[in-house]
Length: 62
Image (tube, rainbow, N blue to C red; front, side):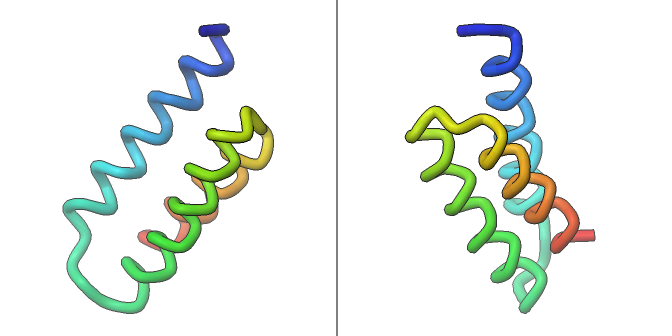
């Protein structure tokens, strides 16, 4: 894995952990949609889109 891929993987783990701890509700639902989009982008090896969706997921949880 490249350093960029490692950074993205760490970010995915961080956002997933925050999502797991979040209380149920519309913010958590919105974050889940962004996280799932990030997973799809990551599978397609699109780091830019993955990071964009992870940022959106983190913002939705804030």
